[in-house]
Image 1 (spheres, helix red, strand yellow):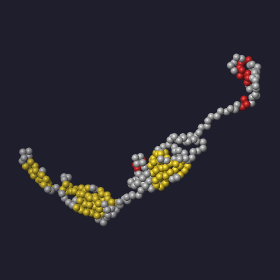
Image 2 (image 1 turned 90 degrees about the vertical axis):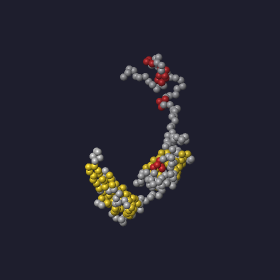
Image 3 (image 1 turned 60 degrees about the vertical axis):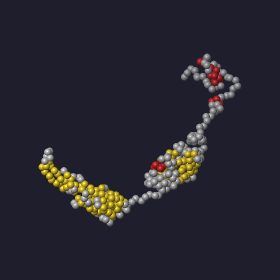
Image 4 (image 1 turned 180 degrees about the vertical axis):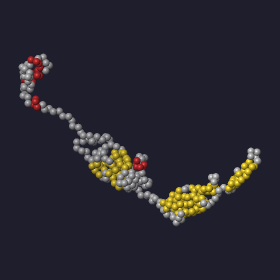
Length: 307
């Protein structure tokens, strides 16, 4: 077999080399391939498509295709042999075709309006509590609500130090998370102190400029302060870095020096008064005490005989 231009020459021979037949098969265009088959571009953007013709054996044939487009008014077409460059002029969907004889391959082209680039930094809508608030709980949930979705990594990654809390110059350990509100996603920063705060103390929340929105625009930065509530009466405050502010002071047990009513009513005696010895307590370890109490009328013997 020998390939010669647009044909293939076949030679049939025996084992000893004797030629028994020769014939030629012409290559025929069988299909057109285009790449890519789908093109998406914005208005004013250009992309190039390439076409190739293949024969019945899958071999590429050096043939040049013609290019056709549905509407040249909405997409501009530049042709260079088997290369076609299409430029989007209006929002549309059109079909670009590579044609050779009766063979056709199509390219689906979609032209879109370019997305407007977000260059607006996120803005702060509100803070809870508001700046300068007083009487705030020592176990507060602090919020910073923004106008748009925030980049979670810029908020939650402690490397950036985007959000922190101070008591004077001293950092306060906090837990930070993102939440959603007002129809937006991840636009709310929630700050929770790891431990109860001190009473009647001023704290500062700093929202750093490392905070970004989903488009990468940096927040300008903001800080606000609040003061916790005064210590309620009956509670003690423990300044040691751990909070004991919520513990109610326990009353010390009191000892009464007042005698029971029964003994208050007992007559005052200067000398022991002994009753007649009961026959059944003789030799008992409490004999004297029983006789004393019986003598002052606190106890009496049970009537005899037993009823």
